[in-house]
Length: 158
Length: 182
Image (cartoon, rainbow over all chains, first blue to last red; front, side, top):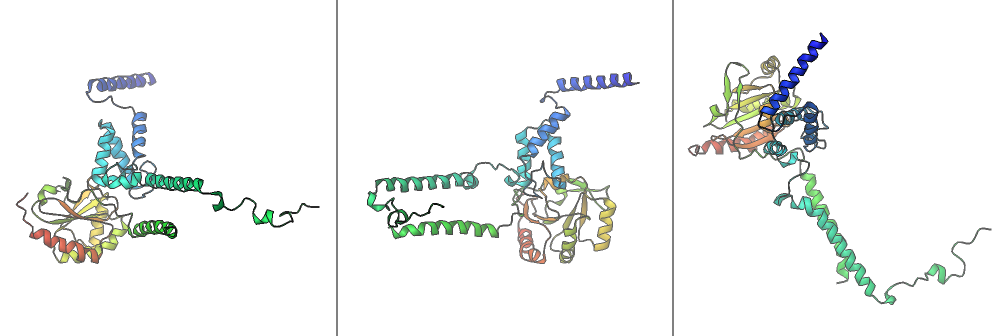
């Protein structure tokens, strides 16, 4: 009985392998690979119902549907970029956790870097100017506490 | 020049505040649909009242129509329902219902109970057509013109204000449009 079954299973696997070799498309994925790729893509997609979760994390109805859509498309041999195109055609760039670099997203992508660069430039300018100032522009290192008063600031404990 | 320095942090603060103020006004739930101005996704679905009959995008070319995505399990759909019924009485445009991931008996009972504003409802039991329409928050409402182009989308329950101020003027404008460009 078990022998028969395992024989059947082996035949099925052999047939499936043959099928995979026969098709022109990319080699068909086994279940674990398919799941891993589905998860990888799903982790790049935003769940629009629960906006701060990815489709991989969310258990919302839509997320479940979109995950199965991704799985199905991968099963059909669609490439990752085809799947992203499919999603953005329907839900817009917003569905991508990494929006594409284009005119409208320049500020988003490079704004923080520009602000950081501006801050560093301002800091450099101020420091450089300060180096060139005469010592008289600065307070003396002997501050009032130590200089003018004869008593030590912190009397030693007896 | 020296006095101006004190203004710099103030200006920076004001720029930041302006951005944040703008952010307060934005609604993160309203994701602009990339489908506006694009042809409505082609579909053909069984009618809810008569599953033997199919209805699709192509049958509706040449007229301005509305598509309302609804489900009997959706609480917000019930909130908007009286407004849709009221609107349908004015016959501004046919409203087609896309019955999203629902069970047929449940959907039919729901319409019997609360009234049926739809010219026809179509069963999208797997939610595939909804995905094609980029639906993520039922209810959603679309306006499609004579050439089959999506011209307007509303996410969430429609209000009388939206129907009066946005949908109705748009329908009038679209109905006046020539569909010979199709």
